[in-house]
Amino acid sequence: MSFIDDYISKLSEKPIFVDNPNTLKGNRNYNAIYKVDEYIYIHVQSVKSEDGYNQYTVIEPPRPKPDEMEEIEEKFAKAIGDIEPPEKIEEKEKLMRKTLEKILSKIKLSVAKEYAIYHFIRDKLYSSVLEPLIRDPYIEDISIPGLGHVYIVHKVFGPMRTSIKIEREDELDDLIISLSEKTYRPVSHNRPIVDASLPDGSRVNFVYGIDISRRGSNLTIRKFNKVPISVTQLIAFGTLSSLLAAYIWMMLDEGMNLFVCGETASGKTTTLNAITAFIPPNLKIVTIEDTPELTVPHSNWVAEVTRETGGEGTIKLFDLLKAALRQRPNYILVGEIRDKEGNVAFQAMQTGHSVMATFHAANIRTLVQRLTGYPIEVPKSYINNLNIALFQTALYDKRGNLIRRVIEVDEIIDIDPITNDVVYIPAFTYDPVEDKIIFAGRGTSYLIENKVAIRRGIDRKNIGILYDELNLRSEFLKLLVEKKVFNYFDVWAYILKARQLGLEEAIRYVRTN
Image 1 (cartoon, rainbow, N blue to C red):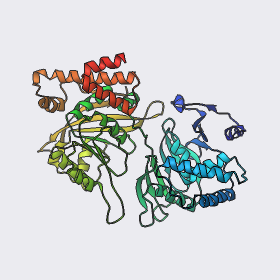
Image 2: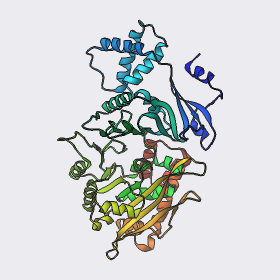
Image 3: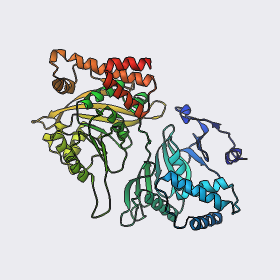
Image 4: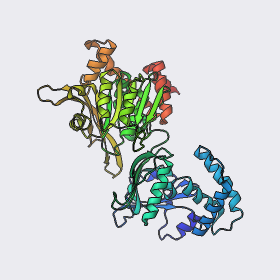
């Protein structure tokens, strides 16, 4: 009997097997198992625990006894000796498997050899008890709030409590230290708070030590896809409309400055990643981030990341942004503006560089207050250099599913010299009843009529040409969604095709291919 059969045989109520948990989306009652990897299964249940969470159970092969694991570790260390480990994680795994195969042929174990190899590699090379959660593509966030259960946010079922439980302080500290070492930004008592990226690209925040975290060390992992979510996927999800995507495409073609704003976990970075495909392909792009999350399809791309040493040698976003201004970029993308680097970003806009960034703000007034207040302190007279503020949020639909929606897109015109208020036009707004993103309509866009038209030499009586073009771009993107062109780099290739052929010809091309 396999380990999964053994697990099911002990259940009073038998679950169903599903290949894709998305088939259960919207169901209030569910009891299902899906496969994540060869030796990882997940059991999801709409059964509330004592703390009000639905249940997420990790099913793994049985683990060797502690003394057996110790023996394997000792023999493995002797077998590896002074061998220089490969740089790539895939090559490291191959070497470990090869070495373990030899070792385990001479050791008597209480479990199958394959199971022992799985647990050893999971613990030593990957993320230990958290590895099944890292590998599950349907998880967005992983949270260890301290001693006790590990919690997740599931893309289909929302917040859940996992079966993984950490009950000893030393076990929790060892896990935090081990994971932080894999990021090359290890935590310590001198540096107890660290932001970093795991080997798979997930963003992680570590807090180490009971002296600053009352329930013990904690961590939060925000997972990211290796291939970014494309703009056509966002349209299909309903995050933004094809017309809004077309509008952003037109604006980025003209070098407009844009901030993607919203609260934590509203999908700001995902949206910023998706819309970079609209930046013309022959431009030089510099990305500046604390942890590497942005992926740009352009070939002339400089990707820069901060460095935290806790002293001399620390490189902050502010330093990278100042350096970027000397690299003659066409577009500067900042992972998140939250400090004095915001002032430099507006100086970059003032000197003709195009800037996109994510920013924590719920609406246009909060955005301006945060930008002009301490510690960012952008002069109010600079605010009109920011052309577009896009606001999005995470909310729940009528079925209780977590969704992301762009709720407003504002065109910033100026600051009123008398009232000191920001003067803006809401070009797109969200209707929560219809779950639709609504365009204000022809003749309402300040940027189309006073920026794009002037740059292209179009007089006011022919302004309708630009709105017709906007509709063509929308039709092209809508067609890509209908044809299920969702891969990020495929979408990029089709946008390049549209640039080569022209929109009308590109629409015909997509329809016939």
